[in-house]
Length: 210
Image (cartoon, rainbow, N blue to C red):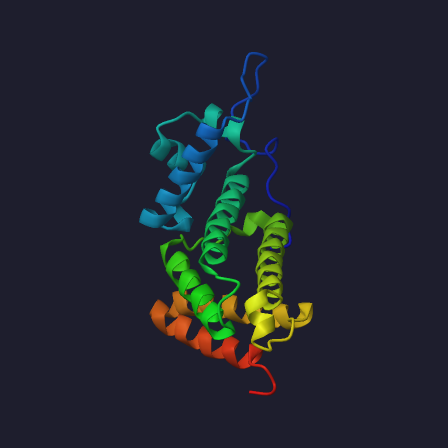
């Protein structure tokens, strides 16, 4: 994954631009193509996701697609971003910052398990290159910041949990994300993944005097 994503200009299947072409990226078209890519991946797999398949699913034209995205890799990246944002939003909404620290862990991981199960598992194409690597780092950073903020809230502090250091958060969240990938590949039930993550996180955050 060392190559840069294919540029829009280099895509031979992209329609040539004309002066009358409307390149306004409308929100409706944007979401429609993301939904269409998600459906293609869900029903046929990531390997079958092509611009032709996406526009066929969306019942739209290539020109409309390229008005919304630079190329297929751009569409993939934005779909990954959307799916991860949905999971993070669900986790944030589930946490009561005044609850006991063990209860907050349960709230967060239960919400994560439910949202992750409903989210689409997307494998970025090799052509996503450095852009894909940057997105993966961004997603991990969002999880890291979430864990740090949770560890500093009122319920955690009242329970004697010390704030999580950034390096510790990277280890914890990176490990849980790898566990999730492994579970998807091996067909491990999500409830087992959540139970393991709960035990792992509880042991890591447990106050030293308990």
